[in-house]
Each structure stands twice: as structure tokens, then as C-alpha cells.
Amino acid sequence: MTDYLDELGRIYGGFIERADNRTIPGTVDVEGVRVVYLRDDKTAPTADQFRKVSRKVDPSLLTHGGASEYGCLITTPDGKTFFCWGYHGDLEGWEKQITQGAQALGVTLATIEGDVFKRNDGVEVPLAECRVEFV
Image 1 (cartoon, one colour):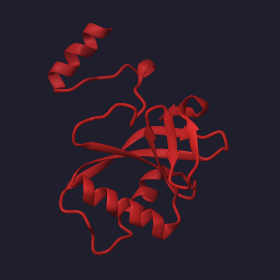
Image 2 (tube, helix red, strand yellow; image 1 turned 90 degrees about the vertical axis):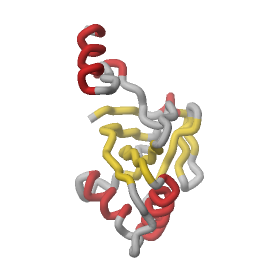
Image 3 (cartoon, helix red, strand yellow; image 1 turned 120 degrees about the vertical axis):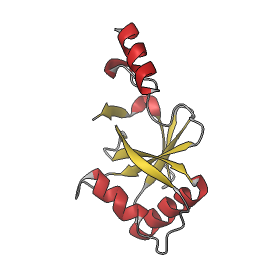
Image 4 (cartoon, rainbow, N blue to C red; image 1 turned 180 degrees about the vertical axis):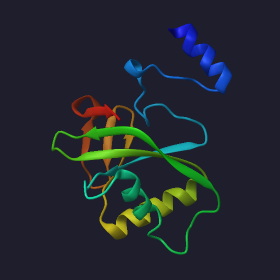
């Protein structure tokens, strides 16, 4: 199986992860990419929630780049679920855009530092105590 995935990776120009051995986004630094987790309010699809946060600040603080959903959900022991997005390009602009949008809308953000899931509301939880799902 590994040889097959390696060959596909060469064809498509990247690394292909096995579904049973996924890397949690944010646990490994990737040059030119940052990862953020947003609290899922379960009122709309996660893409719509991210769009609402990332477009809240107007005029936009972004100059270039993009963002994509990473298909990873983390649920903390207190039952709060967060979905993952990665962004690239204007990293500083994206960070300000997302942070200010989330603050204006009251959305909790989180990042992973080492083996700790850190929320911007001050809650820090060992990643090992969280439930991680890939969707």
C-alpha cells in the first residue's frame, strides 16, 4: 500500500496520508501555512461559519492567499467542538482577519502548541484528552 501511495504522491506532486495514520493539523509546522480551529456553533455548515468569520471585517485586511477546510474536528472534554482551517499567502492579514472577525462575532478560536489545545478564551487542554475526528 505504501508503494502505491508513494507513487500517487509522485504523480500528484505531494504526500498522500493513509486514512488510518492522519496527522492532526497544527501539530506539525508547514512552511507558509497556518492552522486555526473555530468553535462549531452547529447552526450552519462549517464552511459557512468560516466564511462568516473571515468576511466580517470590511474592508478586508487580506492582500493575497487563500484558506481551506482541513476536515478535522477536535472536541474538548467540556464538549465544545472545533473545526480546522488552514490558510496561506498573507499570513499576517489572514490572522488579523480571522481574529478580528471571530472577536466581533463572539466565536472562540484555538490553536495547537506542542501537545496542548489552546483556546483564546484561556482554556488549555492536553491534546491527548481531546477527541479528534477526520471527516
